[in-house]
Length: 614
Image (tube, rainbow, N blue to C red; front, side, top):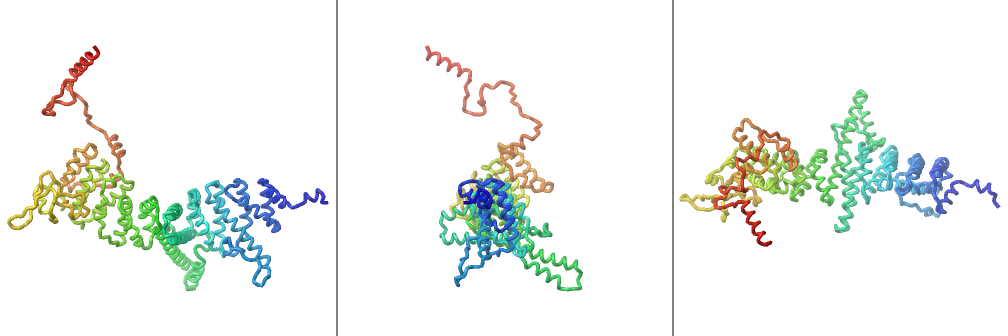
């Protein structure tokens, strides 16, 4: 029979395992002891599964953090000895070979170690992605993952681990904003991290495309992709593009950076000529390597974004991409014209989507030679009352003013836009009326050929009719002695057709801007004052300049009210009457109407009530 002393001398690891089998929990000191034993000798290798069991978001923070530190300290020195293929889990090797012989003990140990490392990596990724993790624990786990990414073979970037990490982030079922808030500022500043981020996102998108093709685009499959698409957009948005002008020296996370080929390229450049000074050779090699890195980054940046834009994007993500496309994507593409299909399709979509796609499409047309035949017809169709309440109306009206700035714009087109805007001024809020007045003011200054719209007497519009159609509403068609067709407009009718989609057939050249005259009596003082200033500017054209539309494009009821409150009024109207009025309206104001005396009416009512009570 064994003595009590011998029982006390049994290994501590066996006691801990027995404690766990019986349902007990380990204290922090016990977990530290297991970690020290694991790092001291391979004889305590069985402590590894015990430590891995505590690497979970549901474990206490102190125990999870202690096991993470111990496991990281154990795997870091052994990681270079593990082949890169061994870092991928779930690839079990068979123990007996074809000859029936047992594998080498060292290979069996590496196989087992590879599986434990896969479990360790899964635990780290789960901690970073899970919403239950504490920020401090998530930060340490993220650093541990990126350290293993940095410790690739021969100093290379371990793209397999990083791709696995990003793939798990995209497949997350909860929000990963806390993780992206850590990942972006700490690691997206490194060029190689950005490069492999774009590469991994492109691969993940291809896997999504293949899955949708096999599922025949089922609605359930497309709806399940909405959350991963949002996560991919957040990753791409957090990953800053390469600014070659600002980033003269590229900082790498791994030793070799993007690839090991760069080292060979630099050494071959150094050996071109022995006669060149060392400083000049070093400068030339740095310039060539920087330009090569910039080209590779731009290529991966373009591929990732183009692949992403081909996915079925949710409406909110679609709008966010269009709103920032001209600032965050187009300036950093080597060939921005590859976005023409996406932008033209968005511009043809109609509504708010077309308004938001206008910025990117305008840049492609003006700077990259894109031809869009029906651009102004689509722009004309976007002028609806709803656009004056849109979220991105400020940028739209600034672009509208820019698109109508060209001196080569036909007169009928400028007249059509001016007339439709003036008609919309009757139904839009005061802030929208201010924008319309500013745009019309600029149109009249840029295109003197349409100044006749300010005041066009009846009969003068006959010379400006572009076409004659039968059955015109509000018009009489008659033939003169010479055989020419003469149109006579009836009094009180406007030949302009606001429902016409084709600007050339809207009859704007035969109309006038009578709506601007109406705005002089607008209920908002800001609108009426602005119309008066417009009339003065047109009379003294040489002394005035164009109006900056950006000053009015972001207006609202609140801004109009705020400006009116700030104004200093010299004269304040007061209610002064020489004789106290006996009624609200005077008889002279409404001929044929008689307003009775209110006190007499009250006496008659009181007398009737007294009779009823008696």
